Image (spheres, helix red, strand yellow):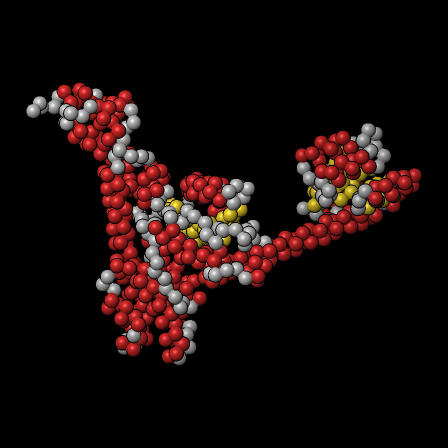
Length: 536
């Protein structure tokens, strides 16, 4: 509905205009009246009005002065002036100011109605233009986002030095990054969606995740790209700081980003980065590494946060699957990486259902899927022992009695891989815990802060603390305290050692600090404990 405000210091005229316009129901007007420009201002400060029908000559503030104020506050509002023959100069001034129309008071109701219709038409025209532009801008943003995703897919596959054409794409796609500077890659994944979340809901949430990242990582240059239904990548370069500062900032801030996503969006999200920067020619290697880190994972694979060190990370692998059909790679690899054997099987059914009844096309699709599965087996490395027979069946299409049996072989292999991956996930987590416990036992006299231990296994400190608690049922700090107490008791049993000599051996620089720690956990000071030991 169009809002119209009548402003006239003569109540009779103002009320008459309102009554006349109210009778014109086809105009669809929401009518308001003010008996002075000052009263009109009070209303205009509270709400926007589409059309103002105002007298020019009024005591106090004039219609022209009201118009000037309106232009500064509501520039899209249309103004129609009611004037007499003696106000031609004022009318011309108003026209130069951008008012829509003017009417001589002697012209009658129809002229007023015609002017209102004209103002409504202009409003609607502008609105249509705005909607067209908004749709065009939205379409451009969607197309730009698609082009950026395609650009990333090619860049993350090609490798090698950037060509002149590659560099030109940075400008064409308005990428907030430099082709001449290294880049840090972060891979993200929504670990679990609400069952009621449809495709549009998921796209909205992915966009919300990108916005949260943009807020927290605002000091750096960030390009956030969705790469599927549940995954996204962030490409990062320094803003005004140096690379060393940027890496420390980003790797430390990911924890905050992950927590905020969980709190605001109620979504469990995993984030993985090598923790380093690479040149554009090495982006495919880094992308393959972070995908492998995400694939291998730890714990229950919920809200993982790994800021590891490239191929030194315990979850990294050199395995790679080559020769994939791009169409299959986009659909099938995501299902396999996520351990979704049923999704992989469903996608296979869709692919083979639409293939023409030609053996060559069937074989091509079969082997594309088989190569993908073989790549997954290869990534397991030594942990993939026992898959030799499976590999042989995959590579010989002629061994299958029918097409249905061949497709079933692909599905069965995917399920075997998913089961092995689940088993290895637990083993890998236990291996990291063992590595950590061994390091603690061998370095009780060293820095065992959460940050230092996280560096040993290339995990985020906060995530390491959570993983340790999930896997052992104990807090990492409690385990360290227990180990230090065990060693302290053993050393206190050696009477030749003084308290100040024992303290640094269990990680305390000062004897007083060690004494407070020991009494807190044993209820006795070290000297009191030693005095109760049996004498030899």
